[in-house]
Length: 278
Length: 278
Image (tube, rainbow over all chains, first blue to last red; front, side):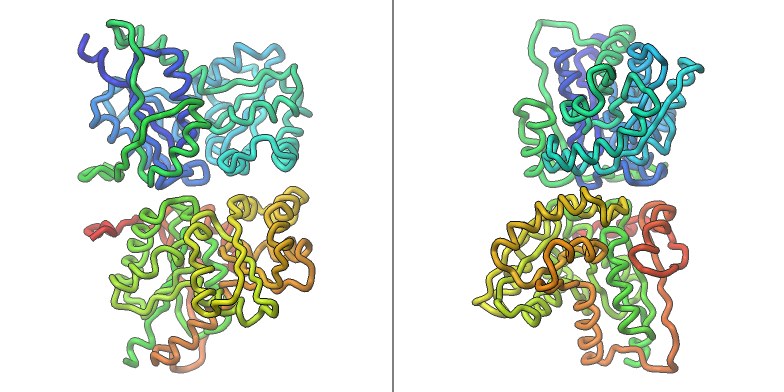
């Protein structure tokens, strides 16, 4: 068991957005080593079908499993929404998503039990947030909205432009009219829009960042499983892998991680001999 | 040779945008059968690295070659920009891109030899339009601009919203200030933005649609190679294939093709035994 404690935590995402989750995990569990996989050759997942998202998520998890990680975090909301049951069934590893932590946190924050959720088309279509919120509190009301233009806007660095605020207003007004007091940012890219979102929803709506709540969830769960790193205090390493060229990763990663990161290694998926459909 | 004439024309794109090329080819060569492949599981190509785009383009072409097409049209500007030399070398088939036809048409339309080009980040970074325009006319001036938000806006159907016009103004103003009299729409999605673009550039700037010029190029070249269909006049079929789920394809395809299309078949790439890197 103690050797397992020393293994890395694997985190994957469709691209670089998952670095917002890496950032929170690294902040909350600074001793832990992290292996990060960004599937940048096939990004985004949020516009694709459930079947394809599940296949890609299995291939990503297989890659991390081969690196002998002690747990896998699905940083991508879309993959969390569609692929978790399959990953739990297929891999003999603790696998964590971002939906359940985000849903639980939203219920802790809301006072009027009217919760807004924004995410990619695929995440919203899955109904995963509504489903889990209703399992935890059958009386809560959930108002969900797909916001497919936000990821491209963030990736362009247009996080606080007039056009972005105008598009955000368009997406968020219907939710505000429903009287939400809590808004789940159901996509790894959205934390970078917090200031713009705050300026539209005002100070009375709580913003729930799935990345933060996921890191907290992970800490508790790994502790219960006796999988937390124990040893001399140190700063854990972050080893990044990507499936496309590394250039764009370096440029974007600083913004998502809020820090420098070592040069990623390029890998090809699916790993030979696995096709994720087996 | 006459049996070759009866074969289909293969057209591929990173997604469904290439249906704007299918539309023009079908309009200009109505007798011809067309096999279309949209790599919807890995779309977009325009944000990815040259190496990855070349690998995907080889896999797409391999799929069409296995269907025994008589020629391949690379409808995707990004793939045309990066992959044509490799495709010409690796496949024993006529392969056409959209860049050269677009460049040639721009030079026919311009009077002041100041040409604007808009496209995805990868297409513009490749410098392919500038290079070919300068081969054809060393004295022409080319002003290029990457417009990464336009594809998501079109895919959302936001082709004529205030936000879209505002973003377009932002992208196009620098080109207009350079005095261009011709603008190449260097991405399959952009023809759907023609009315919005026209409202910003005014009536004195010629808009060049690569899809149209590509279809014209194809007709001339196939005729010279004696590969045009000859036989009883008829309406050619369009057989679509996609790599992701077919649902989203059906919804979007009507807008790009401007007509109904038969239900696509789902295929997986790379085809077994090929990895595009050989």
